[in-house]
Image (cartoon, rainbow, N blue to C red):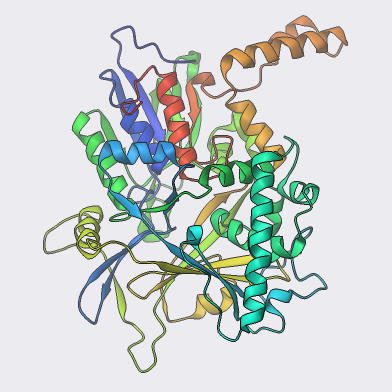
Length: 531
């Protein structure tokens, strides 16, 4: 139920999670004078930028901010994110990428077979025939220049390949705009229905999209076709954008804005273990325990819950697997939304005859006493005053298993690799500067139905419930009393709201974080300043 802002009673709101969705929600709600917000974060710092690092180059003592995971975005699809950045004063600029497609000759330690439109199952990829971890195509973002010829590729083969890819790309784009998928189509079914050649899908389309989604080809093919088609429509011919100073700039400005209101408290190292309706139905009880980072995230008090508090409303800004654990009422629904763990590593540059440990991690600007976001902004803004140069991302695919790793070579020389294929060698490598694991929410046609039902507008929800109950009573499946009790949970029921990149009908990206935060603000009757 939406809170009543008409009376003078202050509204206490708990937000579990401090990613982009949690911080944006806190910022918007705190604009209302009567709303008091408390944010609970299990880590020792806000999670939006907690995995990112600042590197110090031993050659010249220069500093470089590295976002983990990479946070670039594209115009068109991220309109609400862009408006948020404009409102809080986050600067961003155009960023060109060169995507290099390569075939891996090694076998990753991922024992997962692939299905439709996943290369390498008993056949060769003619784009990289007999290759040994060799690049077979370079694709500049938005085709700002003609694709350069990979080393070792004959000119005739390169020109033929470019023509083939161009024709397939034009055909795919026409299908996206003029042949929409059915609501029940997953991506694999849609690609099959439009007769898009498998070679184009396997060697080009799936590696590129899986790098955006940070998932396997199999998971991507099981995703709703509407997600990919919608993403392609809105990003077609749009620029890639990158935040100056990294995502720490956005986190810092959101925290500053929250602090200025005087109505937001941030509690770190507190793990929320349960969210439930308070006794008597008056509010929501949040129970948490302290976390000891020094002991690998264990409880400070392992025997009992440290504390609990009653709030008027609670916003869960966490992945669905966490929602199901802390809010038992949604355990069944959350089990239908798949998640996976994704690894990102930052690796030292490979240099012949040079020092192997060129970069080190800077914890903080000790001299000036500045937090990470101020440090990175000062450094990156100075370095990039002349504009951002084209950056290379190598999409290295193992076609037998259907996994693509994205190796992003950042301007300072280090490489950020997401979904590394050679996991065992990566774990043992002395060149790894930082390794992090984060939860990726996957999308399926079934999970899309679950999410859309949870967030369906209430006016449509009531009508659907009434029609469903009438039908069930007519068929004798339940009596009138049972029909009254059979109301599936909807976002906001019992004073509990969900926000996050997965809480909307689209790809699980940062735009979903902002869209879901805006939804909660409107439910509370809070004006959105940039609308």
